[in-house]
Image (tube, one colour):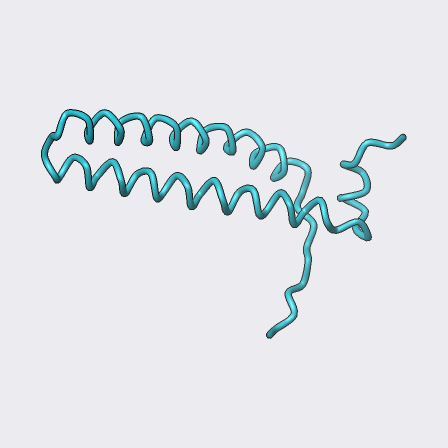
Length: 88
């Protein structure tokens, strides 16, 4: 297994990831709601497939964003990560 180099993100990138995380979460919720409504109405298979694809895409994007933010908080040796953590 190859070792991954942990590179701290710039503060601007972290802010953008935090903002877009809520957009992806909203997309997931709306896609899930549409999927439930489509299944309840027994609508066409094409619409259900499109909504399912959107749900999978938003879930994947949300997951990648969460992992990136999680990996950023774990780099405690980096100056950028230290400057972003609140001091007690």
